[in-house]
Length: 251
Ligand code: ADP
Image 1 (cartoon, rainbow, N blue to C red):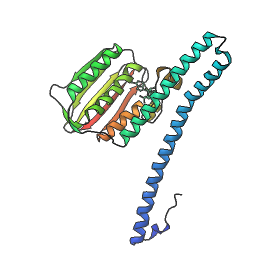
Image 2 (image 1 turned 90 degrees about the vertical axis):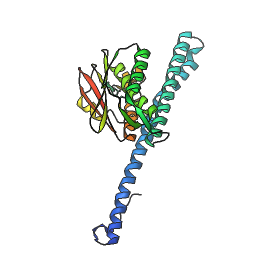
Image 3 (image 1 turned 60 degrees about the vertical axis):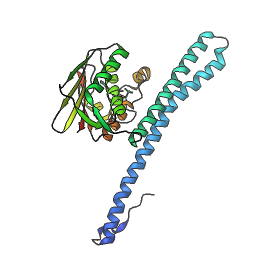
């Protein structure tokens, strides 16, 4: 129950306590609502592959023995869907752990070598060109090396998934922060989608995301990593032209 305390029009100590209590109450309620929403969304996401698996098991029961093609198709689908569930669970656990700030090790991190290495890995893995444009001098911030790499991987992986042309990775700085930019000349995002892409499980095209294996958690994880570094992440995009993600990390 989320009842408010009624003394808040009083100017004395009790009134102040009531105000504080009500504010805490509102915050707690919103935390529980978010948690509840997460559990509801997560169950929904897991139910879909489960339902598909179940229906193919039924199909195999009925026709598998007499029709080897049905058998083969069913096994393949069940395999894909279990992989999908595995990926979803893995990413949900990652997200919860990062949001709680678990297993972060903060140390001095040099961004140039980190970006070089990340771009090389993604370029090799997907046979893509990633152009690098980095300031000459070394830029060092206090951060978690592995989590920052994961963050850059998520953005580069999305860039290669949603665009055909070359990808650009930039490193700049201002007096107070380092700026990492990932730019692609791909399909872009509508203004409405730009507002929602950092939300959990949000995908622009759900049907296609099922094919590409997208969970809609990548950018949520990216934002959670940035938040743990007291930074911010922004998106600028034009439909049909391309997208730029910009990360600001304070020194
Ligand atoms: P997913 O696992 O589906 O890639 P993300 O959270 O990483 O989940 O991204 C959410 C959605 O944002 C994606 O489904 C995709 O439609 C859109 N998106 C992300 N990056 C880009 C990009 N570089 N260009 C166009 N759309 C993108």
